Image (cartoon, rainbow, N blue to C red; front, side, top):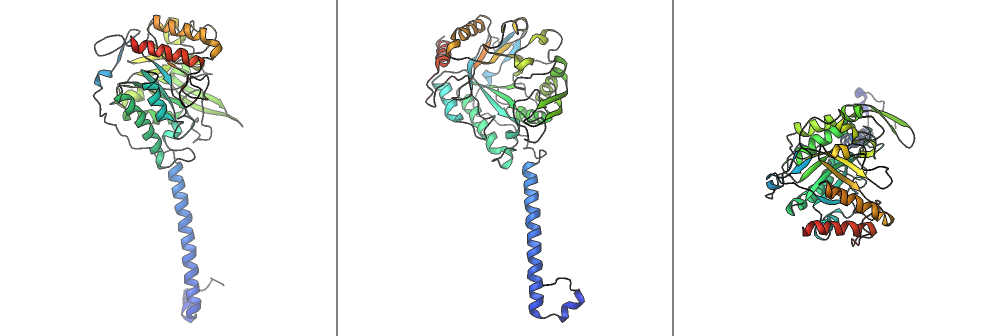
Length: 374
């Protein structure tokens, strides 16, 4: 059928021809509207500019006494008494949309292993709902985090909200562990800091394991490169000072945790002119047996600023190392979280999802029980 008829020719057409033209026209319009709807819907789902609303979750529990502050190199409570916390890392929300048994694991970590603090690694892109399989802008993902934090608060347990994975501002193209934060991380902390500001049991771990950069870039940001499977990406990294400022400008007074360079192993620059300007900051060191001279990496900083080992761990053949770390932390009032309360994210603390401890897990579970009984 030809559709090039002029309007003036319509009167000379048969009713059948006019009906066919109307039907074809409606079909074409319906197709165009459908394509437009799909494109708009996909754009809305994928657009990094579609951020969640800025909200503050009201805390239903009376936990104001859980608010902590720093003084010198100590972490103190509202009565200015020393606080030292021991717990585990609970990973999987960085690489999955819903986590691996995270609710059940949270309960086991608190009720069976007697954790006082639990670190939860997260993904900046999953927070915004940009991962495959997500919808509604990450609302389900954030709800899972809300549930974990509320459960911890109800049991008077602290949570470290850890920004673990980002994508170098490439809209999920290269989501993973990178050298430094990107600008999406700024948006993450602007929302997350405000969301949990009424939960004093939540610590904000600004960025997991900065590496491959110098102390100036660590503090102030700058041009940074990152390797992907196919290419090298250059992006403008955001420094730790800016991320800290974002948290405080959001109105949150929660404890902020900041790891040093070299995969959060080297804290030397903190006492040599690169400390972050601010208050209630705890510096982080990740201690593993394959890292040489582990005490040297943080000893000087630990004399002047509060420290936490929010990752340390090992295998069954590295128990002597684990005992040394636990003893050193106890002697110097350093909090710690052991990696990891998962069956596959090694080095592991549990053998299965019945939470049977690995050899290193036996050591950690015993240390946690000693803390509980003190």
